[in-house]
Length: 308
Image (cartoon, rainbow, N blue to C red; front, side, top):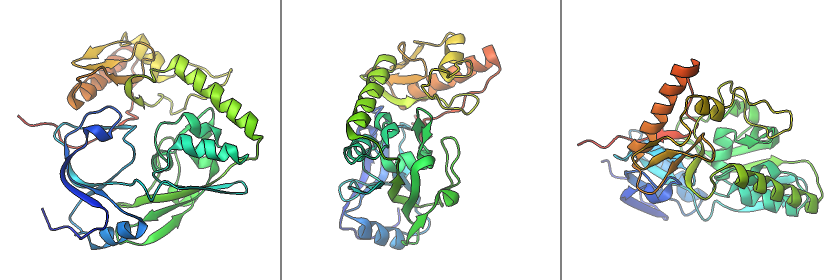
């Protein structure tokens, strides 16, 4: 592989990614780069040969890395990118800050970003995927997102630039999200914390939070997100069509569709990425056969399968 630029952070060759994903699967990346700070990231991107692919990775909460690994430099932000600052009802958070931490710190200051509390992952992923629940989305509260471009420049993007859609945004090719600024409605800190506690209770009742999963496996068929409201209809939820196809609890190798919530793909202990993706594809096939609906993956799958 082409020689890579000097860095102040950590650059590791042939780094296995399995311990960096919530599903605990995945082969090695050609390189893993953990920048020391924003300037280190900018310099690296600017000096990196144009033919080298990069893959920005959050906390791996919504990701299957295939068993053959990734032919890329995986960029993973850590310390130096996880700060959270509150000014009035504006909250600025580094891309590596956990959504749950942002929600809690905002609530302490009387800012309502409570919907972020139950979203697994970091701010970078929340912006990239327009994460949301309970009828609220990242797009509703985002003021700006700061990115480092492949040329090494820092640029602020608005919600219009990002063109938010259901679980999608238009990020420039090769860009790395560095931070995001949110504006939330005012609320009473005690009430906000009480609401988040209730959200967590509901989540733990209905989702396999103790298992190794990557959150929702498939998007809801009509493109709607479960709102959790009393008037929410369930006729076109992914879990419902999976149940109707008889795939709740289905297994393949060490992979299983959770008996507790059939839209959660879990690693029961020794699953490979091929087991997990293969079971997901079996579910998609069965759902199509029984309902004519083609489920779309919500979990991102990247990398190469293992070759014999």
